[in-house]
Image (cartoon, rainbow, N blue to C red; front, side, top):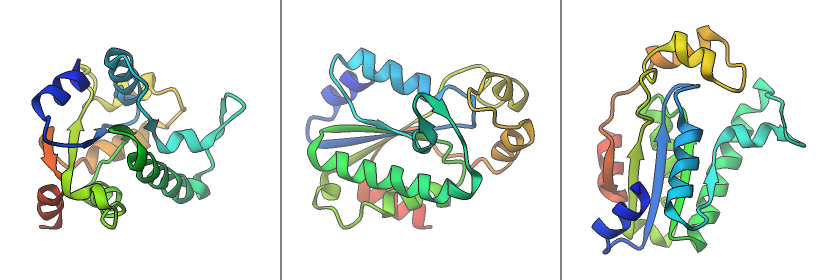
Length: 171
């Protein structure tokens, strides 16, 4: 419903990147899955955690986190070239993290008409490290989830034109 409502309310935009942000265990992947199911059509969805999936098993290697985000950014950029809608879900806890993902797209011809739709899970525990730690499926230690929450950058959910959002994040 979020995706279809967004399309109806924003018919001028040709492409939309949904950015789902939240601490580990807050429900980002679940929200992405629900958005895809409710859209009734396939939507490419990427998250850095996918980089660590091997034969259906998650194997996080801390030293490869930078590579995982590079893979994720490149996947988003490539998918936006051929798809109307793409979803990326990562923690995006800081302004810098948001900026880096979007800055990666700046040379793409579609950015002038790209809508960025920032979303967060609406779970009761999205700001509760103790509960999110219990719910996360990748074994992220509680102190790491607490650190994510401690560096959380408040940014309003909603729809933004790419250029306007970049100006806001550069401040």
